Length: 183
Image (spheres, helix red, strand yellow):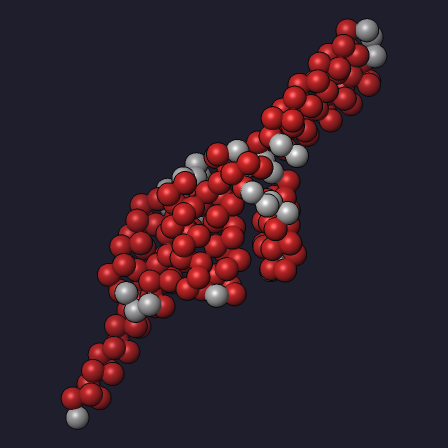
């Protein structure tokens, strides 16, 4: 459903709730007010993205991908504020199937912007992981440092610490490989 249509429906339902309350039907008015609130919430938070995120947390990638596939044109179906989150969800799904292909989605999510700093940090941690897979230590370190700055509530501190540890192990492996090449 188009966002404008959702907003119009929410306004009409809320007006109906107010009218019911004015005419003395308080019970029905409150019920209709809650229904209007749910319609208004669907304007701000797309239900397909919420359900896809829930399935992603449950590790059901196929189901998550199905729900995201219902959003055919995200620029028309979602608010502009949700575009970055849509690309973040697609990137998270792609990172589990084909990690190197997910880089473009994370970069697009960052360029479109996200309002929650921990989501920005999550995208940067994911980009650091892709950089590590490409053996780009400088890029990975830069993304991890940026992620640490963006993670204001320290929700992802353990993941950042773990990835920095993996980078240290990567350095040790490279030293060992170089040592063998000298002989």
